[in-house]
Image 1: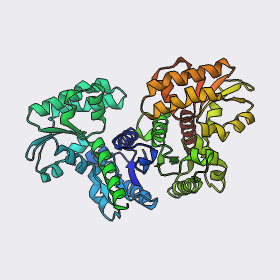
Image 2 (image 1 turned 60 degrees about the vertical axis):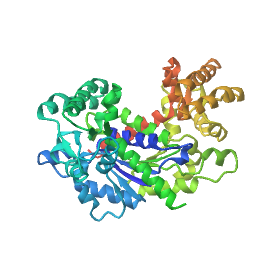
Image 3 (image 1 turned 135 degrees about the vertical axis):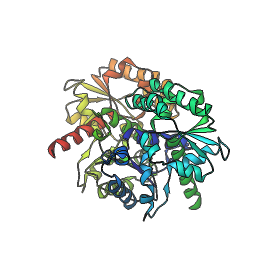
Image 4 (image 1 turned 180 degrees about the vertical axis):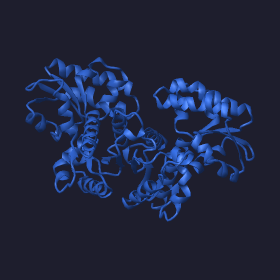
Length: 235
Length: 235
């Protein structure tokens, strides 16, 4: 059973659950991955903890981690890019594998872009400021290519807000323009490292979608792969 | 935190999660209901246990119940109509409130049909055979009106199968015809007591939808109401 440390926000957790089911080669119900999903929206806001001096969510994240493991989770996943800022702390003393959204995303980027390529990053200000993807991308042989301030203010952040407000089709052209700009500046592929942005591109059926990796979907697929491997081991 | 005994099947649990979020008057993430969702598709099939002599899912249901309570659930819900066959056993020794899909559904039927009215029931053969809604409907002053065998074989069951196979718009006209027939036979309202059937009617934007209660949505709304009342108590 995979424990899911979610609720950051609840809609992103719902989207992740949906993508796990979609990624499962299931004939019947019994072929699906057993999940224990904590959707706890009371976890302290991650952007405020990173960008200003808001309270740290770490104690709540650790409590959630330990609750899921005590309840029988044999692996963990966390469908929130920003919360991976605390990944090292969450790995510390964690008795089960923790499937990283960053590693899952980079694993799928390898299918789109050769080593050494610049990788465009579409993310919230907190994820970018915390450099959550930067070091792992460099370590994997890529160079992160970030949106400039003007792109953030006019395209990325308004696009994310439109999805959050329930208008993904209105956010679509903004996120698409941001992806287009990063590709025209040399990105070999673009990481959609914010849960809202794939929904915006999907809503407008953007042809640029196949040059992007949806980090939520990548994490979902990595969870299905992990579960299938566990099943094979125990067969 | 509301514990959700799910995975019967996983898509119904996803639909329930989605309906809880949709039913929540949320301005921001923090207004959402904290949930701990067990989506365990390994629970023994309920129809086989009821209709033939398949293994009982009760031991697994009790283990799930106790796991969720031990992990901090202060109430429980189970988004599966058929599994409510074991409701009395699940209530036995259960230390927290268990929000019933049957009671939630009947609560919403009261807004559509006066006491004494016949209530049409659209459900799987197992839910009908186990009379899961019959006694509670009678107790609430209604008389259950069941589909006949011909309707089950030509409309209800093929309609459910089409939704399960990923073709809700093809199932729509079949379920709509079943609802229409029950209404024309005198039903004051129809209970959609099978998780797939509301998806079929929604896919064809059926005008009969507002004479029906979606039991999954009714349970979702009952959970939100329960949580809001708890918040108010602790304020």
